Image (cartoon, rainbow, N blue to C red; front, side):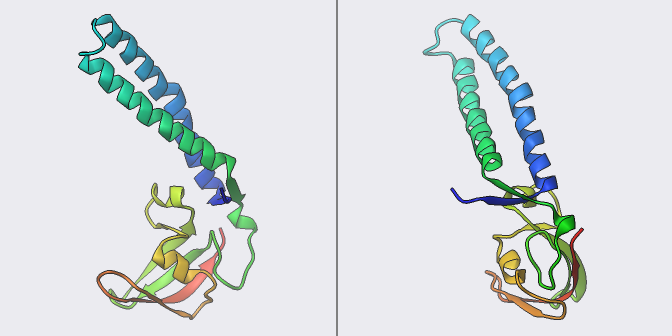
Length: 157
């Protein structure tokens, strides 16, 4: 498996979610299983089967998060210096369709899903922005048609 780029903040989000799953969800499932076993016949016990299904889901998520942390390439954005947009950059873009400016940060997949104004490096816009400089025009192919942006400025903070 390749390294997974993430910011320090993104790593902290994963660690927090993992801690919750291990310390809270696992314990809740254990209690639900004990309760369900006390109800009797496990073959026809809906509570038991629901708890086992939830346990499977939670254990899968725990394994996924542990794998992401094991393969994490943590990047301290504040130490980056570049004249081009790279992972972790905070970018002010002008959206030509909406005629407004927007501020986004290019981050890893997991972090992008948790917070607004953060886009994945693997998203169409994220991929289009990598390597661009201030003043560059960016065209993104989207299902509803091409989207046009201009890089106004970017920073690493």
